[in-house]
Every structure is written in structure tokens, then in C-alpha cells.
Image (cartoon, rainbow, N blue to C red; front, side, top):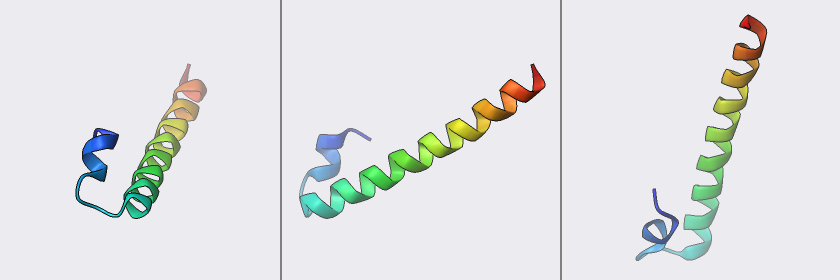
Length: 41
């Protein structure tokens, strides 16, 4: 999701908080996947 599109017509603070939480979740998933890949190689 483009950050600017996420802010259209919404409360900017809530939209930014939601986007930040989403990005943190993605980073967490990628970190776990990366750790798994390190263990199997």
C-alpha cells in the first residue's frame, strides 16, 4: 500500500499508526523467515 493512498480521507495519525503496525508485522515475518533460512544453509 502506498503511504499517501493510505492517508487519503482518513485521520492521518490513525492511518500512520496502522501503516507502521503493518510494516512492523512484515519485518517480523521476514526476520523469522531469514532466521529459518540461515539455519538450513
